[in-house]
Length: 76
Image (cartoon, rainbow, N blue to C red; front, side, top):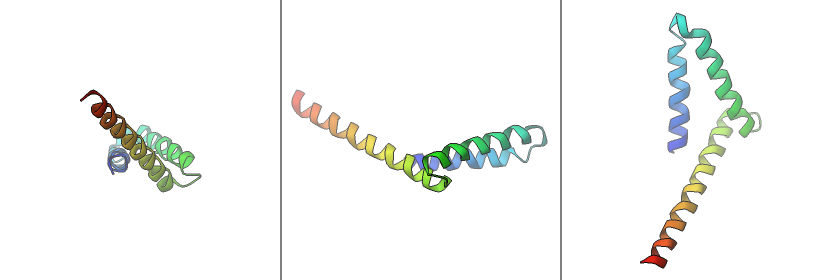
């Protein structure tokens, strides 16, 4: 859930910054870039991209926890 919350927080912050006239164009460009990256990972769908990234982070976390647990058993 942390990657999805992080991605959502970034996008929402950029959307809020878009309401500031000075930073509107920069923020809009950054939102487009974030959505483009998510669409690459999601085969054209930004929500699927966020889910793919979150799933990948979860698998990596599980692998790291398993390694740390097994390493603790071996050394402990």
